[in-house]
Amino acid sequence: MLLIDLRRRSCGPRAVLGRSIVSRVLFMLKPHWGEIFCRTQPYGCESHLRGGVFELILLNMGQNAPNGQAPGSTRNLTALPGNTMSMGRFLRQLPGEVRVVHDSGDLPLRWVEPSDMDDPTDYLLDNELILTSGFPLVGVEEDQQKVDEFIHRLSEAKVSALGFGLEPYFTEIPKTVIRACKRFNLTLWEIPASLPFAAVGIAFSKLLEADGAALLRNNAEANRALIRCVSDRNPEQQLVATLSQRAQCTVRLFGSTLRLRYSACAPDGPTLSSEVTELLYEQATQSDGSQQFALLQDSTGTHLGFPIRAVAPGRRQAALLGVLQASFAQTPTAVEHNLVATALGLLEVVARQKVSGSFAPTQLASSLLLGSRSALDEQQLRLLIQSTGGAQRQIRVAAIAQQSPDPESNFAHHITTLRSLLETRLVSSSGEQLLALTQAAPNPHLFKRLEDAGYLAAFSHPAAVDERAGSSLGDLAIQAKALLPRILEERRSLDAAQLPRTFASLLPQEASMQLAEQRLAGVLALPAARRDLYLAVLRAWLGANGSWDLTASTVSLHRNSVRRHIGTIGELLHVDLTEATIRMELLLALSFIKTS
Image (tube, rainbow, N blue to C red):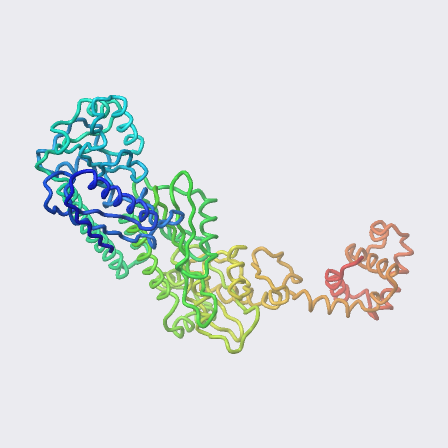
């Protein structure tokens, strides 16, 4: 707070000069401060330009300025909650002697500015009430053109009203001023001599103080309402609904896999397209800390995205727990930002509680479920659904391995991270790997999240979440663990449902290629032309199930040449090609050999 004492006893041009200096000081300060409040206390002089103690109260709003708006800009800030300060409301706070000479409507009121400058428009904000003693019009009050120019400048500056004070220069408002205000549709008030401008400023300050106190009470109550949501049976859903109601915005809560969990829409709240939603989600997840957020603005409003993250040990990147999106029809105020920040902090607490705690009970439950071959009863099924995401979809078993195993890594960190990434509590260790029962659908987005966190995962085929799921979870675990060697070799996550269901698909590529090269070493050691010919003939002959004629047609050779080549191949490989098992092995080996 900055207090400036200007004690002035003069009522003439020197007083006007003093007021001009004050206005210029305000003009220089406004770009650097959020809001300036001027309160004048009477100090002796009986005229409307009476001196006084001017208290310039500057409130620094730079830290709370909306993103993209210069700190200190007040053109988009309202002094009252809900933008409720208006000319009509302020007029009701003033004595009845104030007369409305011309009414152009109940316009918003953001400031009260005493000014006797010839042209104060460079120092004005939108929607101000200008109080003047008429000094700029002294000597020209009968010149309609000059009066019109003065009033026109005020109208162009978006002044809400002109308060014309009687005495010491005028005993009534000049007719030229009344005609100009009507012509340019500018509200005109007559301020009697019994009401000093200081009293008007004090009335405005009291109204600001009352609305400020109401704003603080409402903000405190809104924060208490958000805090009470934590004790609800479904705290996340209740937090989303309460935030939407209190901040008058559309709120959506996503999981770590872009799955919409809860949403709430305020009346006339903006809507987002799926493309904008995904873009906002991606931008929000790029930040490393929960204090950063994504901002998008379009024709529907302002959209904010906040990442919800876990606490990572040491310098590890915190795992993403979800994303909170809030969409406002207009630029959110500092109060609305505060409500979103409170809700975000509470959501982080709730999310961390869900993925932390003692790991032993859930590991035991996971092991029992994966080792069981019996059906689930109603209670067990309900607990399984609650533990794996809360929505009755399809369930999978995921086998997870670290991309770069670290023997000194924090076991609790891995469990917590995977619980959040896969949206499940059922994560258990299995040797150097981890197994998870999850309802999260494997897709490139989830794979990228896992890989960014340092993991590779193999997902089993899905199974319906019903009583029979208990008897199939063991088989799903076998499917997932069978893919572990392959994901480690190929350095990528895999979904069993997207792979061809063959024996070859279950074999690690590099090890299979080495075995195939050993099995076909006698042929591969030949010169390139002879090697490729023998491989083509062998592949065609095995594919034709030993038919000489069909093989000859496929490779465009005489059947006797095919018989001779097959005989030579058998000798080179030291195998009896009449045996079915030998043929099967060679056919499988050829699928891992690339020919030029």
